[in-house]
Image (tube, rainbow, N blue to C red; front, side, top):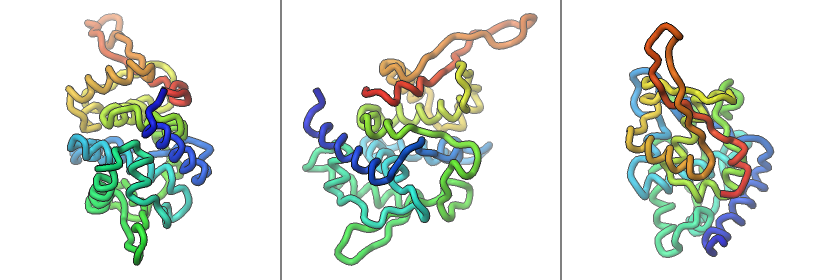
Length: 244
């Protein structure tokens, strides 16, 4: 039985999804998930750095992206810090302060723009994750994208999973590229996600425990070459539509 904080959060997440009228997957740009050759860590990896702070800012950003559906992809009347805290199942004593601090971090680091409104909570506007920033464009309009079903929010996966597990989930969905069979992830591609080996290993085990990920050992190379066994990953996307 979920605790009261989780039950309240699930109710608010459901209301937010209904208000956003989400009917399809929430799209994220590949540029959010992985970096181009020689570039710094991608935005997703930067979000999850910093322990407890990384968890709040990642989950805030994911919720903002889910909620800001229409151009110019902003939330003119966003939740108050207390409501955000309840939506993320944060402790009422510290949650609002953590939300306020991490919204400011998202603004300073180019993920969103906060627009002050006299006597009201600042409005929130998404910023493009493509090179050069600029106006946000829905990733599904740019071509290839990484999609999370709305049930990721409404079923409570955003509450259940650690920030590193969420980051690996998005990375492996990007690597899977819509294929249904297990996919091997090269070292170069793994490095482009900006996640350490330890983070990758712990997050992988967490996703496996939840039935979200299957890992198989498959040979690499031709029949005439030495065949080294490597991990091939397959995200069970249907599991995301169920409760954790």
